[in-house]
Image 1: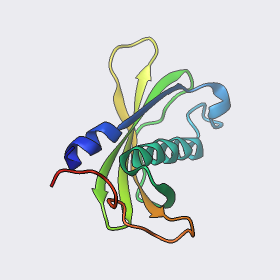
Image 2 (image 1 turned 90 degrees about the vertical axis):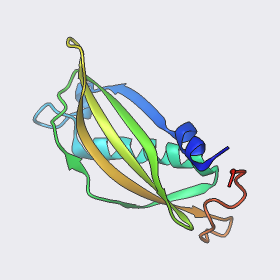
Image 3 (image 1 turned 120 degrees about the horizontal axis):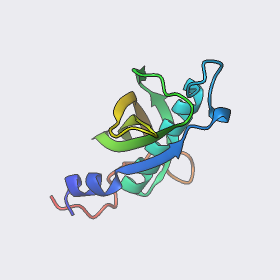
Image 4 (image 1 turned 30 degrees about the vertical axis):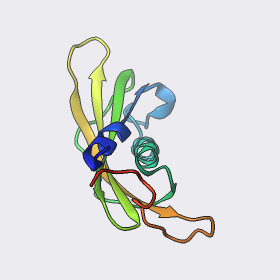
Length: 134
């Protein structure tokens, strides 16, 4: 398998409905909840990519481009963006779908970085042990 095929296979999509208990006083998706969804889906994509123990070490600029109202469907899509020696960067996009309308639009995007760890919680190479074609 090539690196690009491995990245394609690890892409992760999670859909959910924005119920009122997920919203703020504006009746839109709470930003902290959106970030938690993004961290979780990006963690799943990174884990599916390298199958190693990972921890989140940073989240880069997160752009809240469109408010997501209660009663919407959202889809969070995470895809490996770049690979360092011991780290993986994953781009996450959250799309908004209104329940009563066709189409969707990008609402939130950001980048999350994970580091692979061994049993002693020391960083290890992300690609080590992966059967990838050169």
